[in-house]
Amino acid sequence: MAANNAHKAATDDQSVAETQYDTLAIEQSYLAEGQSRRVDEIRYAIKRLQSIPLTALQKKPEINIGSVVQLEKDIDKQQWFFLAPAAGGYRCKLAVQSNTINIVVITPQSPIGAAMMGKVLDDEISIQIAGKNITDFITMVN
Image (cartoon, rainbow, N blue to C red; front, side, top):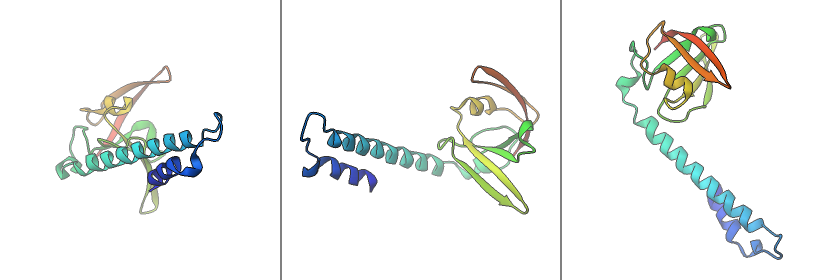
């Protein structure tokens, strides 16, 4: 809807440039293009998430798509990672009994996701973030 509105605004008679410095129509067309791309990305992510087989969500020893993982340094913060094929960076909170659990969606393409793939409980992972080597241990895999 937003992409359609931006497209209409970009092609509207009111958006015709009055001077060479009037860039409203160009700005509206960039906005429409960006919003259309974002819609396509979201549709693609939804398809990828819907394609996760239910067996991938079952508890297993090796980390793969569908795994929920906690690292040692994140125990106190109740921080978990959900390894998914898309939607990396999405964050949510779940209330479980009297606890709040923080979940971050990561993909195998992310540095931490790539480091976790194929690992098992108590394995060590090492990643480099902003020029710093970070090492941690996998404490929970669901």
